Length: 199
Image 1: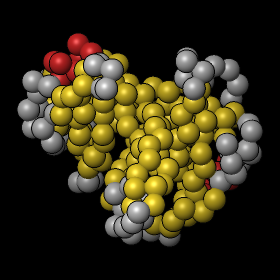
Image 2 (image 1 turned 90 degrees about the horizontal axis):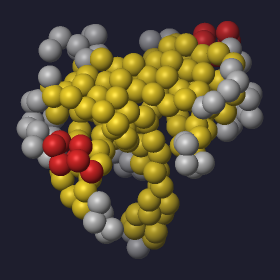
Image 3 (image 1 turned 60 degrees about the horizontal axis):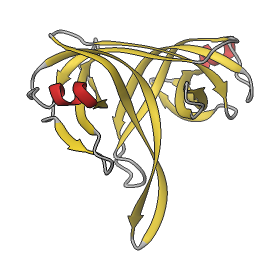
Image 4 (image 1 turned 90 degrees about the vertical axis):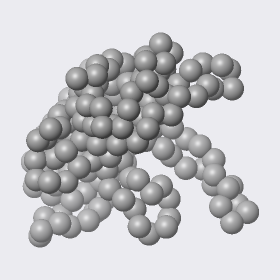
């Protein structure tokens, strides 16, 4: 497979003002949290990364609503603080908007880790997948995905190296971790899969 498919659209409310994230090849990038409501009424708080140029064309104000199109990205955090695999949303377009919140991803990639089929404490089957999605210039994004029920059972039969296409949404999930005798609240990001096909 030469390149993967990584198309994502979000519509939600900026929870904070943008702050400087990093610079790369002389370009400054900013990040801000976007609050995207689910149908259940709960909300995902997702990290949006946006270039200084795009931000100058569409300034972001906390409390206002925006639509972003782009892709889900990952990078390895080697600082030892927080999650080792950091997931964010890289915006290629950004504009003010109003209306129903939106969270839609289409991905195509290769499984790079054996599926982990398990049950929740309440007995529901879930399967964890790690999908490698190639970029156009030689790198890949490693994206944790989760499937449920009958789809989880079928995903449990997949193998490392299998190519899949999926539709889902990017979600945030709070969890608690004990480090050095202290309990900390952390946030995990993963793709909740609605449809998946083995190609």
